Length: 374
Image (cartoon, rainbow, N blue to C red; front, side):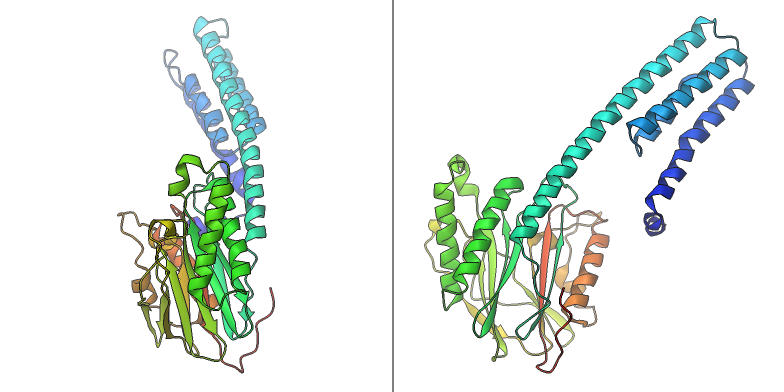
């Protein structure tokens, strides 16, 4: 039923909802006129503008308020006369409350416009920072999704990027701690550093060290870093997939491990150990480890941020990512993310507590045609 209602064009939904306060006005007026003289239902007419304010703007709310006041006047004329103190008080109270509702709705309309503008700026910045990933790069098919949290007042710092070297493809997925402009600024530093370091260093540990160095320099130069400097960090996962070897290399800096789908089964990849998140390496000084694992033709590797696994159902249970993937038929990277997004939103009731980014990588057959460009 909800899906059907969302499929109805907006103007028709609005007309259908508008019938509700009009029906309330008509019903209350008729029942009041048919009731004994000492029964007064006119004050209930305030429900009409209150309901309208929940789905319409200030102007339409004001129109419904005027209709409600007119109905109260009709009740007064036909039910004792407008000269009675009771009817005069009811009319005055209805006018005052309706006016308050209209003012409230107008303030909300202004805030909505301002919020839409701010969100548009955030979205533009994120689109500039996170360039769309190609659907085919080297021997890999790539798919990506970004699901924003329901709380749209706080933009997250989830990020992903890809870099093509001479004989390999390198990918980054990460999650900046925090939200809003500071998180986007931190994400910009990491993305810029990755796009440069991916071409300058032979191994992933060196790339991770370069990201750490750039982020540390960013925090040191930023005037606002101040007392919260130790609380700013980025979890990151770096992947290196050679063109001519059926393997992949992985370095993890405090990020959730990837999931591989192979031979109809899903499982979390073992690793050589995870380094601290970027920005916290200064606490240990340990070099980030690197591990290798097989990645053959037809294998699909899923990279994701913790917004996926931290989604909860109504009972508070976390989303069981591996268990869900283990029961799905293999359909390639694009089909996997399409189904995963639908299943994740359905599991969480349509609302995610945190932004979720996903990147699926599939090693294609050498003779597979490249998909159409985006």
